[in-house]
Length: 459
Image 1 (cartoon, rainbow, N blue to C red):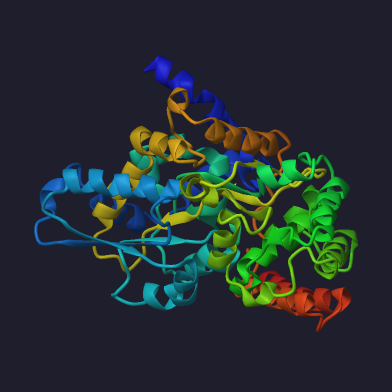
Image 2 (image 1 turned 120 degrees about the horizontal axis):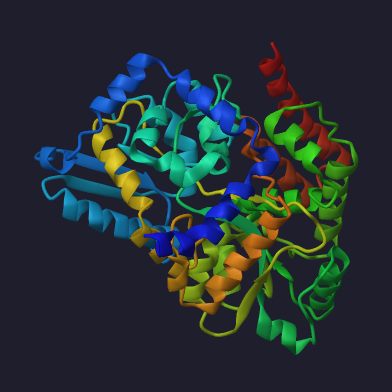
């Protein structure tokens, strides 16, 4: 047992650090949140967690909604978790339903408010989604069951930052409403063969990155694949540029509403103006708004673009799909903060019919077997046997993430602050790409809804 713990220590310690920059609450507030949980909720959760729920499954249908495709690290890990669940719950009928990210974003609030809610649902983290649903009473408070089953010890305080929400729906403290089973961050994937053709090396600054992009433009090649038609990808391209002028105060103001924020200040102005420059210089081609992200990633896999900025959730897919060229990754260089966090949340809807089974499944996803499999599929695990990681690229991924962690540099995601902010931010960026608004006008567009939501919190 001691040797197993030692194997896990490096990553476990890293994850305790990973959200320290914005972990408003820390261990003391976490204890307060647990203590403040209503007594009747605690009792109900204890009753929902029988010691051997596998014996009580006859005739029951257990439903899971998620958007992790087969071939991805998380998708393969959860598929193995499902196999283990079915082995240990032979009398339960399982419906493991694959949705798209957009489907769940658009329908979750409605489904969660009905008796048709699944028993487990994957949802996006942050105030705009998990926080909103928690505030509306649509999610089960997992505080007591997490303590009972030992998830608190495994996840630690910092990993729970994006899973805890107060009564205003703001992340960082309050009851635990979900669990994450992995870490994630945004990076640049690049075609090593294309770089070698032009004598290019991994950049060490934004200026060097732009010089690489300029080289491809001059050669008649669009440097970066971007599916701005899907709204969310372009928000990350923009936010990565904002973070060149960002600091801890900016992240806490923007994500946690700890202070006022001037969207026409240095950080957001730099991001908007630099992004507009990149568009004008042809970094994303002339039809980014007409491309969805699935097509953009497919085009990168086919070798049609030398780079794409996207998340670690694509790493396993690229390992499986890219066969015609060598590829690698790098963090967009020259800044301290990076888009990323703990992974998406698995939640138990308040209207779930089989909460005890849901708890069993969540526990399996956190098991060492599943976590080690995820690591070997290109994921960033939280409970894996790190000595069993076989692939050099997987180690490269974890090392890149460790670089961000060492800088206390995870800055969450740009759409998180307020409900509906994904469409506000992504829609504004689509207009910026189209040239129908200026950077200043775009900043006005995104500042208004953010401030309006902050004002409701101050009332």
